[in-house]
Length: 158
Length: 427
Image (tube, rainbow over all chains, first blue to last red; front, side, top):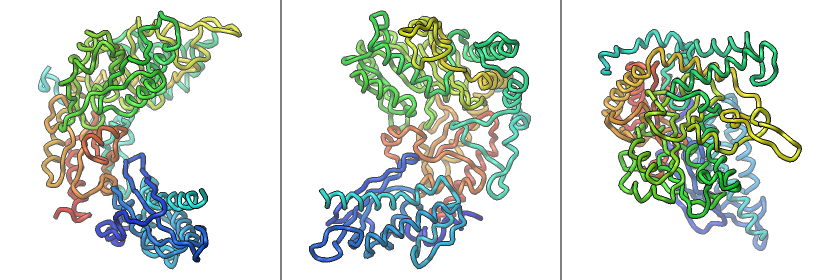
């Protein structure tokens, strides 16, 4: 049964007991993303801390918090929950590399061989990549994160 | 006629005509196709008609004087006659469009174009102070074009609200449709909740105030007998692909005197009278609204679909779907944790059955159903405002057609239970 490959226990666990859920302050930027085909949505906040005192926000800044609210399917919700585990505490540059690795996995049509050191729990989403209609679900929170980070940078530059 | 007099549909024989219904999906599961509200499957007769056109008569219609051009034009225009008679219309009142969405846009843009034209087009002109009325249950295709028209012209968009049961709230009909109303556009049958709307009541009020009426018949023409003369509306839009026909063709039916007066939407070849470097005149309807080389093979295919449906009998199709809908409302509605969205009785209601399953998102439900070969639609079905009004993000929709069986409904119910077991929401 292909369903078990898609809905791995890790995914269902994150869906039932999401990590870091709820919107928190302080935050530098907030992004609201919607999947127009189903109406699923996520509101995601990012708080960044400059790499050193007096430094501006750049790629070396630390992702000090990611908080979110959302409604949607198990895939979109679990994926956002996994995202928070993976990205909180990392630098923006590391976060972007993780996003790249996750995006690549999602585009692998079920044939990806993800690096567990980089993606940790997110490797469980390999089964999702077999279903083109669900890739957007898995990427919803990640796209919101990318958006919120670039908004934070813009604000800083403004 | 009663169902008994009609005699039931020979579904087994009908299914033989649809090659796709015998294939399997995913892990060799027999296909249970319950997404005809999105698009219908096509019988061999339709595919053959289209192929025959390409193999024997293919040429650009309404152009050239060679034999193939004559035959192609003849096939195209006879298709128009067949399709017109299928809805009780005359053929010069039938305009072919790319799809139903374009048919609605054709009217909206004709009105938009009339806004800057001379006074003889006043009937189609809208501007500040004028109102267009739609409903909260519209498919985006019969909502967004009117929103846009209002934004371009300064007219006001108003709408009938929807009750919790998924029916139109007509309590403010006389206030909503008033002397400022230029056009009322609404669905004959909802693509989400299946509600069949009271065309007579709304049209009668529109007549009192002199408003035009456009009926979105995408979910009615394929599923029940529709006669434009009896409906007494001004425009009727529907698509070919939802009624066993090919993709790429839709129909706008319009009253002769309206089509004769309306300015064109898309301009170019074929739709002209005389062309000068500085100005042009228009061909008569329907050609005025059919710029460019038209979709003759698709028209021929759609005519074959009409013939197919006529042969079966639209009364029979409607009776069969009614039976499926009743069974689905009963069977699916009885599952613990399932709530039908829309009327729960098969009264003034067609075969689009939407529902929510407690604690299972429609995407996840659809995935389990798909794994068992049951193909349904999940999401907001291009009716986002309706879902918002009903307080739901998304629903799962099963929609039926003449080739569906009671066993299909049982497969649906069983698949929903399987999803509940899979996600552990019900034992």
